[in-house]
Image (cartoon, rainbow, N blue to C red; front, side, top):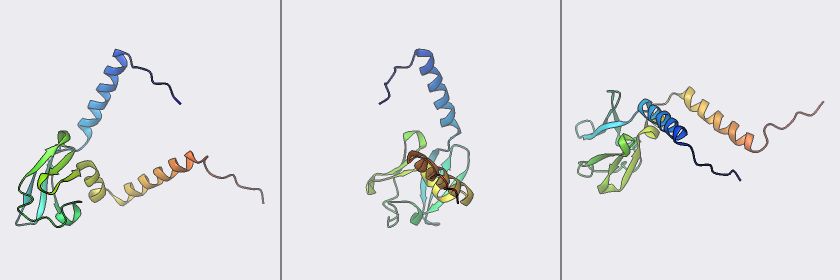
Length: 130
């Protein structure tokens, strides 16, 4: 088992700086509202983009009524949506990846996960000489 080492003040400051930089590059919600006329959840992102999702694409909101969706709150610094009335939480990064991610990117992520899992099992089996 690896031994935990407490980072120095300089290492901690560097980790904090890198994490803040990564968070600034990640898409996050600035506001969210339910649009009755389009029957969509409209989400404004920190990039300025506005995306709308039909309720069927949002886990936990598939059968929600318009009244259920009147009070949507942003949580976690923009990384999540919360609908208290339905006890539903939606991850913004996961939603964007699932719904807007390209097929090529999804395939690449799946391959990377499979490769990592295979590596944990010892890697590719060796080919036997014919």
